[in-house]
Length: 49
Image 1: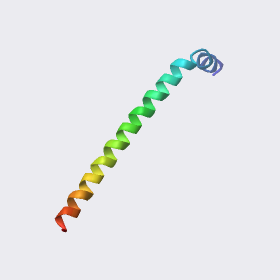
Image 2: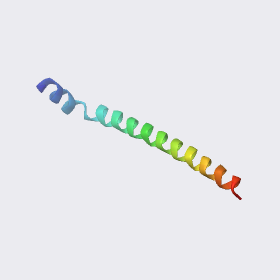
Image 3: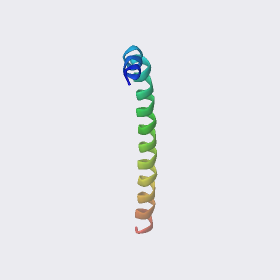
């Protein structure tokens, strides 16, 4: 466990980069899903007009 902590302390930039990439991927996924849901809702509203 101590080796893992030492490695993390010495590689903070690398860990920050990985976390940033993960955050960006999650953001893109969430935006894609919300855009898809918004399109479906808009299509259903058009049907009822």
